[in-house]
Image 1 (cartoon, rainbow, N blue to C red):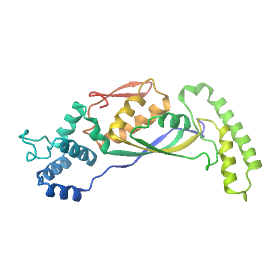
Image 2 (image 1 turned 135 degrees about the vertical axis):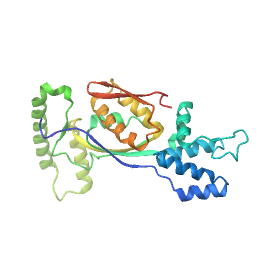
Image 3 (image 1 turned 90 degrees about the horizontal axis):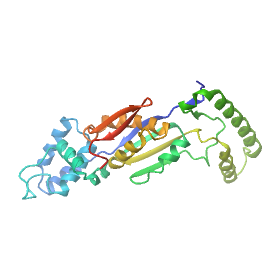
Length: 264
């Protein structure tokens, strides 16, 4: 396989954390310090801070952080059981309080054009084709094109040669930056959709359940399935309770995921 053929790689670069000091201040102020013990137990059980935070909001909706504030209840669930119950009940809004931050490298614009269609609960930051030139064209090669790989590489070689000649003709080192940006933007029109770039995106837990089901489907495009298979591996380690109702089947060498209790 050619060195210029790449496969996307996903990095989980951040996720929501909570400020325990501030939570304790709130619990002290509202006389609900028993919940601090629930946090300690949850951490011992391997429940993540993201899940604890979402449980905090879920319990707060029903004045159920302790038994003191709601005369209708005589006991409270553990944080892990509260997460499970919240998922089963479909109370998905509380999971919008916590988010993951991803960086995807060596992905194509075929992938990014599909990814950015998901607007609710997501944010995107992508390589700018107006500022970044494309003299070296690396390419995300769909395995289904294996029989014509050599032709694909020849096509890319030719585009790269002609692109380089256009850059040499149109862009001078001392050119005004504004004009240089305009020419760079215009020249990207001849670059292939399969050219590698990068995109960073963030999404909340609720949105991610929807994305996982939509984009690991056997009917989805190969590259986006490949990316979201990686994402499932990364997030499952961080939020084990939230993703424990995840079920899978294998199709065409990739996993297709569904949630037992739906996408909430």
